[in-house]
Amino acid sequence: MNIYELSLNQVSSLLKENQVRPEEVLDSLKKRIEAVEETIKSFITIDWEHAYNRAKELEESNDKKGKLWGCPVCIKDNIITKDIRTTAGSRILENFIPPYDATVIERLKEEGAIILGKTNLDEFAMGSSTENSAFFVTRNPWNVERVPGGSSGGSAAAVASFEAFGALGSDTGGSIRQPASFCGLVGLNPTYGRVSRYGLIAFASSLDQIGPITRNVEDSILLFEVISGHDEKDSTSAHLEKFKFNKNKKLKIPFSFGVLKKNFFDGVDYEIESAYNEVSEEIEKIGGEKIEIEFPLLDYCLPTYYIIATSEASSNLSKYDGVRYAFRHSDYRNLEEMYMKTRNTGFGKEVKRRIILGTFSLSSGYYEDYYLKAVKVREMIRNSFNEIFKKVEVVLFPASPEPAFKIGEKIEDPLKMYLSDIFTVSSNLASIPCISIPVTLTKNNLPIGIQILADRFEEQKLFMISLELEKRFFFDIKKIPC
Image (cartoon, rainbow, N blue to C red; front, side, top):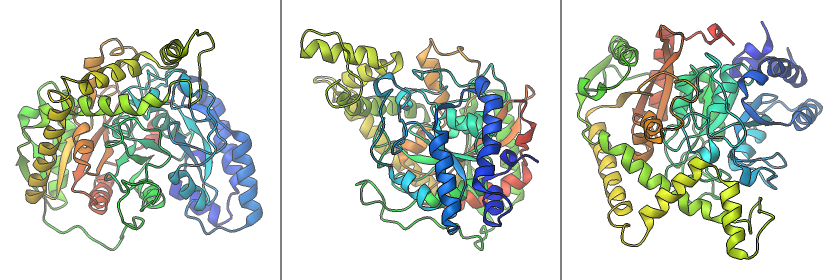
């Protein structure tokens, strides 16, 4: 077996047992990347010099205490990495070299990880297909004519195509879980505040969260244990110690789980609905008690999300004006023209669209009608989940209404693209944890993922159920055609 085919936990064990060296692991990945990257296009930047220097430094130190000692990990390119280019998928940050690391990067390094490279994304994480990157489109390793999902599509494609053992993504409205589902992977959106956002280039600050994308649940646990925990640099960080998965804790049988009523599946692909029902039956077999839940606010989640997210984006992106950060247009006659030309050239079409939408929602005369109402509906959504979790311990949602769609199929119809997020945005609005796990393939050999949602800070429960389901829906990612 090639080293690059191993899971993150497997390669970590081999490194600690001296059966392989960090440099050999990098050699294996390099060989794989050279074979498939031209087709998949997962990475914006791969800094081999940094990676090999780090491997050499680790070997010479001979200190193997870290959980990820010698393990290469790739990072979505909207997470700050010291001395490694960080673009957020945008021309406006094309040549930005950060002078510091995000907290999650510091924690990976403290545990001995090697930062392999920065992965492609929809510009400033705005998109559901990784077609909105300023640089290139990333392709789905299961079918290169289809999208890998977004906005963490580069991270998902890299892990699925064996170019990386694990990756970090960011999730604002499903940007980890939807690409994980499209690429046959495990994607975790942690409870808001459980992982530091310090060093994450903001899209919508009250929704953004960093989380792992991996090939199995155990790898997700490993990465989450490393990056979680309170950070004084992030004022929204929860005052909790690092997460530690309790292997001895067993599921309390019977446990209740919520399923959506049949009318929620209007317009959903029949293979997705079929997989959802199959997973529901398996959860009953492991001791779950199925309860149908009412969630009348589901139809309001998407418009609420897009009003809040675009409003926060219009504020967060105002600092990219050609004065304080990165790119500045060279041809201008006065300050106002410099602002206009810099932002018009530096930002892509989707980012401009969302800035305009957000600015409109926040503008005088419309603030009460749009943004303020959206904030009130968000509170109602949170209360609705609070009521649901009084009746059930976890809730089952589809990850996406359809499997991976074709490249170009929705790029000219933003409303159709936004509907891809209909089952994922609610957990971000409610600040609750959610995991997407792969369960089966469609008749066209495309992965299908199912989400499990839990109450705030109940990641232990999510992982316990996911591990049980993973045994029953063994998903052999080595069937991947690429």
